[in-house]
Amino acid sequence: MSEEKILSYKEAIEKAHSSISRFPLLPIRGIPLMCHIANNWDSIWAFRPDPSDLLIATYPKAGTTWTQEIIDLLLHNGDAEACQRAPTPERSPFLEICSPPPIPSGLELLANMDPPRLIKTHLPFQLVPPGFWENKCKTIYVARNAKDNLVSYYYFHLMNKTQPEPGPFDEFVHKFMRGELAWGSWYDHVKGYWEEREKKNILYIFYEDMKENPRREVERIMRYLDLSLSDEVISRIVELTSFKSMKENPMANYSCIPTPVFDQSISPFMRKGEVGDWKNNFTLEQSKIFDEDYEKQMKDVDIPFRNLI
Ligand code: A3P
Image (tube, rainbow, N blue to C red; front, side):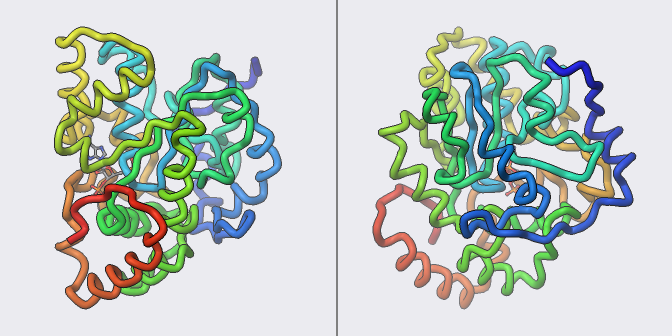
């Protein structure tokens, strides 16, 4: 265990203020990643998790933070105070994230934590360090319907000053369809984990199902983790992880990331938390073009996405 003091995100970003910018993307095996991630790729790929570590994998903006909060509460028997110990990215490190020093990288945070750790990644299946599969780590994948996922990612680009400029919405839609955004193609991402879910014992869940019946999905995750919590504790977890509770929770709403990086006055991290918000953002013409392209890109799989029409 390293004795070095790891700064909180707040302290570190305040120090690194002048080196924060909209970082360019560099490809790793054809997947565009933020340059700091690409430049540290060898150490990320070499990461060896403990068999007790849990992986939560998502395309960005699919409901990662929500699921991290649910799992942290499940692992702490619904103890709200225990889950207030630190903000989300410090409780559940982001495996591949690398930023200018002294902002701690995901690997640094992980090196300072004892397993079992709840590890977040946005890496597509083929870029997940092989140690996760060799050690048979439990993995939860959350998928969100493409149009809502795209809209959420667009607003996130506006407020997150480390992502490339999104450009106008129409241009962003085309970049999404072409897989040019950070972490690559949404289509390949959701398909990659879907195809491997049985072989690798991945729990594959949907944002829309979580919205429709959060209790059912919390129980599904609980069973996958081999936990058995009382009905009362499950009810508390559902309440603590509602959109409203998490929006007001400073340990879950990303207020830990200061304004030079996350400008929540442009768009809050906890933005709307709804299904179907794409209808407020896509024109009919954009939706038509998107649907035609979607048919082609998704024709080889039958993943039960909903709320696309
Ligand atoms: P919107 O931008 O559509 O509001 P991620 O955590 O993967 O970055 O995903 C962020 C998205 O999940 C945002 O979507 C955010 O509002 C939504 N979200 C976060 N917590 C939520 C919750 N408890 N219930 C519903 N949606 C939530």
